[in-house]
Image: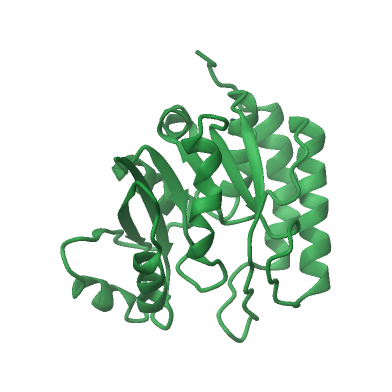
Length: 237
């Protein structure tokens, strides 16, 4: 039986953490065991207190202070024992029912990495900010120029990695914040992994509902695309 390590970085997600864990638990995957790893990134809203009461079946990593999504993800990747690693945000924007489609290309031996795109397919997508959509598409296009990928959504949370792929990536991760999405894509390109993309559902949040990413993160992304693609070297063994 294969094992799927689900990495959940969480920062101040008191209102949603119980629900997302329930949703992850409820997903039934054919022939796949689930390992759930939660990395609390120094939450101060009561999230940590909720996590401390969870049963031992969850692996929980508590960081002493907030250090960013990228740092939290690296800690989760390092702790994972699965054949596949998958990123799951602690909010309710992404639906764990998409797991089977995300991991299928890896299980079939066709892919090393799979991206879940919010911009392809016929699954439901909440209608929100037009400038977010345009910004995401521009960032993806700019990244594709350097990687020669044909991706439609590099800023997506849902990225799945084979064990061999993530082990190669981990030593090279330096991003601590939302720029982790840019760095992961650059590394995937440099290692010449086989990449697939599948359509996913998306239930976006408004800022009033707790969305954290800002327009300034989009501007920074352009800088990081240049940095990680042109000035980051790896040994592709």
